[in-house]
Image 1 (cartoon, helix red, strand yellow):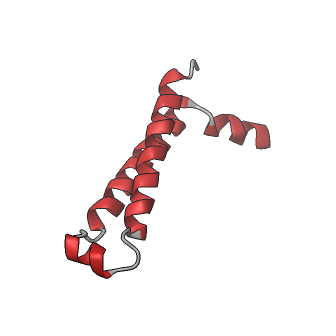
Image 2 (cartoon, one colour; image 1 turned 30 degrees about the horizontal axis):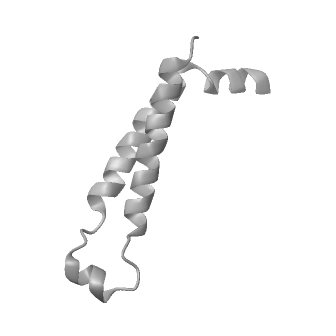
Amino acid sequence: MAESIEELLKSKPITGGFAVIAFIGGVIFLSYSYSITGNVVLNNKYSFNLLSLIGLLLVVCSGILSLYSIKKKK
C-alpha cells in the first residue's frame, strides 16, 4: 500500500498539480503582503516581510516541481 501511494505522488499529474497549487499559493502570499516603502525600510529593524518570503519560497518550489514534472519521462 505504501508503495502505491509513493508511486502516485511521483506521477506527472500529481507533481504538476502540486506545482500549480504552490504557484497560486505563492502569488496569493506575495499579493497580500504589505508593500515596503523607503521610510519603512529606514525606520524598521527588519526590512523584509515574512509573508513575502513564504510567497517567494512557494513560487520557487513551484518552478522546481514544474521542471521536474516536465523532465520526468513517465
